[in-house]
Image (cartoon, rainbow, N blue to C red):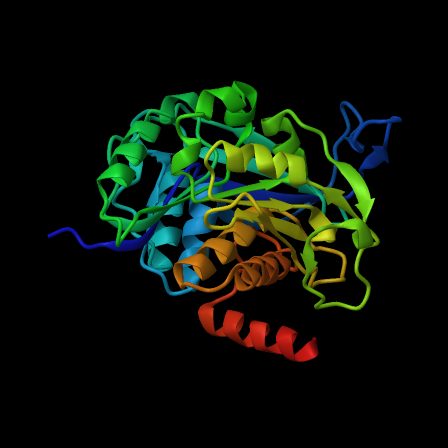
Length: 354
């Protein structure tokens, strides 16, 4: 008899190598993002900081495992040394790997991650031809990261499983979309949105996916409830109400939008009304990050894990914020992820500090 998992993660599985070049030039063209440059033909000294498994499916699976949830990972790896390393590391962390697809004559996905002294990163990514998963294990919840076009056939399986579950024990679906979904556009997923319990995006992704722009407003003008767990709260935050409403009207049950150092906002429609519950998450860590890689996945893990433990929306945001802020203090997308006892202790400390 197949055992039942608390959570099954679906998405990319990679091997990430972190490099810190000794020589980098930076500049920022007006109205554009900051650029990183190296001299053509130069020999650049660099330090290898770490080598870790990564990708949304692996990052989140390890995070859920650390929070003592029975976790299975779905994804695609190659039949190569990188794939063997990935399998070994996941199994060491008690993540079930038997649902991973191992492709013959295909490389495992890998990334070179160039890290700046401020902890920002630029990623060079080698992908493979990921295949769609035709099935997934018995599970209480699914966390979906970025899927390629080849993998998107799994939507039908998820909807079928969602509709066939007992109302007393529904399947929880959390979704953190990626580039393929944003390029495909909002309209393509109209049939899937009603089956999404938690949609998690950052501000830029939310704008891109919804086709709507946000604007900065003063915190005092926000209709949300601030969770004041720090002294110096940002004076301005993004007004995300209209963006959230678009997803809620499409059928999504809960929308969570992160905004870097300005925290995160959670939106829910209350029962039998269109009133939106709007919460602004705390920013726990005031220090400069060591590396921001994996912060989004770790935030999602905290939010969904708290939801699966039947904790309040306030606690969901707090768990997400604590987990994300722990990750950015270390290299790698999983090293800083909190274990359950550490999470519970951190929550007590933050609430006590308040």
